[in-house]
Length: 83
Image (cartoon, rainbow, N blue to C red; front, side, top):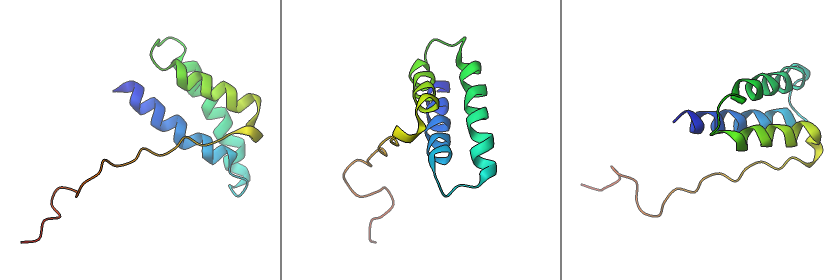
């Protein structure tokens, strides 16, 4: 569960840091928070992909590509039945 939370946080922060329309405050704060998050991941063995993604972004933010969103499975959502 913790791995999923870290992945969502990283994938939410990276596009914010890469967004040219984001505020100057966001561009100043978010990379520092990513470094803080990466250092907190250092002792954990499971979220190494997130740490690598942060390193890749910090090394070359111009080449950042956001992760593709997860597609919803086919079919009608529960609760959409007509009565």
